[in-house]
Each structure stands twice: as C-alpha cells, then as structure tokens.
Image (cartoon, rainbow, N blue to C red; front, side, top):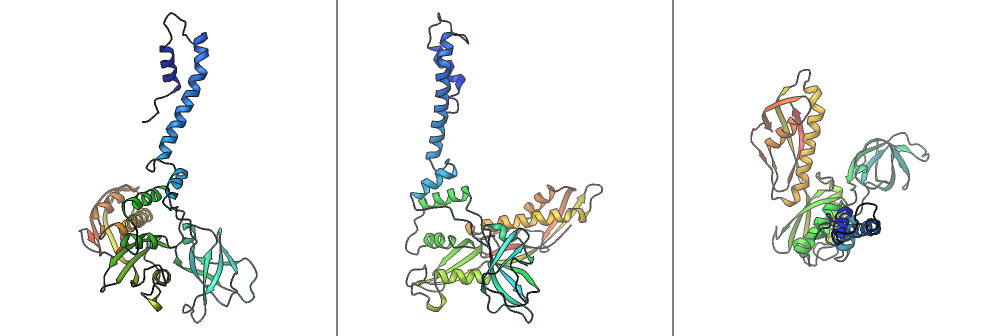
Length: 358
C-alpha cells in the first residue's frame, strides 16, 4: 500500500466531510481551525509511514536501509580500493617514499623484481586516494620529500585497478543473487562470490572440470573492465590456490581443487564509418567524440562480459552512437575489422578500440 495520496488537503476533506453540514466549515471557522493542525500532523505521519514501508523491503530501500537488510545475510558493500601502479625511477628510492602527480599522492610499497631496464628501477606504488580516480593519471612524479640522486620518476603502468565503493544498485542485485543462488563449498556461486570480493577484480567466469576431475579454471576481468595485468592474475591465483602447492587448500579453494587463474583477452577492433557531415564539420572535428563513444560502448560490453556466454559487437550500436554526435547527419557502410557484419567474440574475449576512421 502506498500513501502518496494522503495529503493535507485530502485528510482535511475527509475530516470535514464528517462534520454536519449545518455547522460552519469554512476556512477560518472554529471547526476548520481545530482540525487543520491535526491534519498537518497526520499528513506528516503518513509520509513517515510511506518511507518506512519503502525502507523495509530490499527492492525499494534507500542505501542505508539496504545495507542494514543485507547485513542480515552477512553482506556489505564492497569498499573503495586503492589503485596499484608501476613507477620507474633513475635510482633506488626508499620504501615508504611519497610522490605526487596532479592532485593525487602515491606511496612506494615494494620493489618490482624483473621490471627494471638498463636506465630505470621499477617499484610498486599505491595511490593514497581510494577509487577509480587512481587509475587515470600517468606521467612524471614529484617527490614530496627530498631524495638524494633522484632525477627522474615516472608513473608508467596500472597494475591493479582501484575501484569506487560498490554502488547501490549493484549491491542490491548482489543481495538478491544471494537469495537465489547458494554459495557453498567451492561450487560455482562460491567461486564467483569470493573472487569478485578480491581487490581489482571486476568479474569472473568459472569453468569446472576444465582439465580433468578436480580442476577449475577462473577467467577474470579487471575492475575497470579491461584485461587484467599479470600482477593481478598472480595475486588472484595466490589468493585462490597458490601455484607452489595447488590443490592443498592453502588458498580460498577447497582441498582437492586445482585452480588455474587466467585473464580475459583483449581483441583490437578497427571501426570505419562513412559519415555525412553537417556544413562546416569534418572528421577532425568529430574524431574526439567518436573515439569517446567507441570506448564507452566497448567498456559497456566489458561490464556485461561476466553474465554472457560471449560478447557481440554490433554494427547498429556503433551507428546509433555515432548518429547522436554533434556534426553528423548520417552514417553508412560501417565496418568492424573490415567486415560489415556484427563481430562475435570468444567466450573469454573483450573488445578494445583499434583505429577509428570516418
């Protein structure tokens, strides 16, 4: 039952309808003045009741009350995580040293073995600001404290994407999923629940008995919906089933499960479109917008990878998005990697932008 119609005016109408007609009920009368304050209070009470009703059920509860409801099942929103990146320096730098780039700060956490070059020394750094913002900046780092001999510091690669706190609707769906699928003892639902809870993971596909009895293959996508780095794959492998003693239960996986963790593969897709431009427009004007919409579409597909057997890059979706751009009147003859047909990807593949031309 909803109470949106229980307004002050409606309550006053009902109250006054119960007063005999031979009594003055006009605004300003004794009866009006006696019933109006009570009607206001009742309207406020109905509004509170309506909010309580919506907050009680998980499908309509605001975030605060959804969290309280989900806590009854041991669920909580995934917290924001910190991006981990590779930084290259011209010399050794102390662990714990802090650097800045733009409005973000970074701290050195460990030496990265096997990543040095003849002129650089590689370190793992963590962004001090949680969330996806830590995935976005690359370039020259400025030391916050003086470091002797340091002449060059460069942030070069994202190793483990940071993620924002889980949004309300994703958390709501995860709550409902927990009701419809029971995670237990290394079943598929259990692997999905536990792998998705790891920092840097945005989704996982589980392949049981993929290489004989007791084997499980996990294919992951990074939390920014890109192909995961080898470092992220190694971290997940170690957390689930360490390579040095696979199957012995030293990770999250049950004893007897030999788990192999792999990452989705990126497939580069060239997009070419014949465009009819508005007067005064050219490809040079449209290109930045076109690249942005292609990236947005491919990322949208990446968010759907976990829940689909395989992704389909559709020509119609590219054309629809191009038609919404400024300066474009019409599009035709769209090709994906030279073909005018939709592009069907493999089960463990995601699209990334190649060349875009119009």
